[in-house]
Length: 217
Image (cartoon, rainbow, N blue to C red; front, side, top):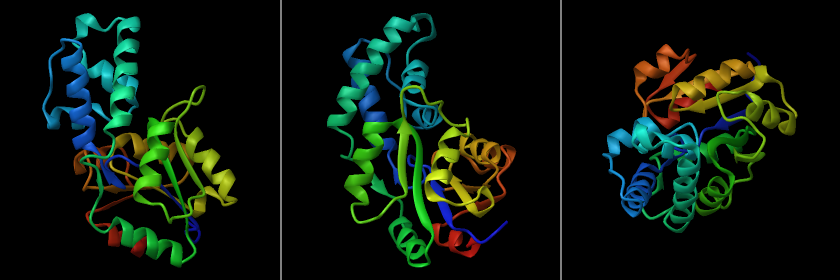
């Protein structure tokens, strides 16, 4: 590994604790459509692969017809955008970590499976003064993580090498994305998924507190 010049962060469960708004919004849309609601812990296992997969997982299996799933997805996006930051907040130590990394000259980017408008909205709300190399979410025609395209796009924009890059996330999807892109996979335990999932998915390093990431630079 070369000196770290770029840190690519996952959003939900890594930079921001978003589960409260995701769960509340999904429950509201489930209720709107006469569908069963779920617990927050159940939603923790559903998120991470994009809104379509979240909605699909929340809908009873016998009702997962493509047209109906798409209708509920549209309902979710509309509701969530209006309620996106009622309970959401950065994890303790994250703002300090971002500031410390930028002071050391490390470029910062976001790679999320959340839809692009929601990703941009949250970054503007909670990190208005941070200069990100890229803030990328789910976009039409671009595969979701764990496909490495999003990381490779950010690496090219930053003008660095994969060997100079960290991908930091809370899920197995993020660890798989990192390896597919040829970058170092850093798993964080304060998010939505377990340490076991991170280890089984090939995390190169697992950290319990944001400040530990500074030791990797």
